[in-house]
Image 1 (cartoon, rainbow, N blue to C red):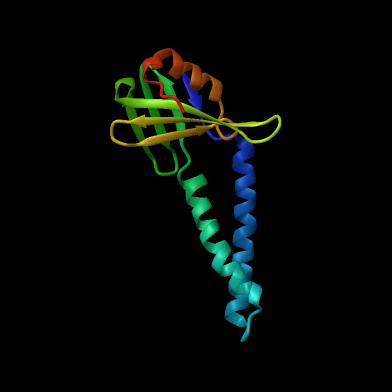
Image 2: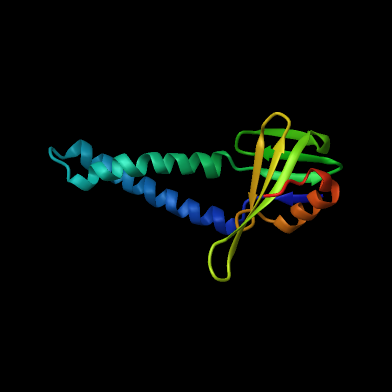
Length: 149
């Protein structure tokens, strides 16, 4: 069984950013409600940082998923939402690996798996654990469904 989940370093980085963002938003709300004429940056923080913080909280933590590949099926667990999706390998329409050169020595790699109900699963190399194992599992089990990037 191969289990892939977000890396702790990724979760820590986003978590730290979100905590700092919510502290700034909270302080700005206090200033906004208590001051007759709040500073211009208070409006900027409230307008820009609030939606960004809420979006990242949803995207990273509420949408937290653990992917399991075993027994000819792919299981996607959402522990925060207490739900899961099971897909037999036959329900995969295609999968592909996108590789983008981002600098002189670095590349961005991402696996995309599309299922027959139009659900799309994305796994990034620097975001999820066991990326190479997931890629080799897909290559071994679903080689004919691989699509060129």
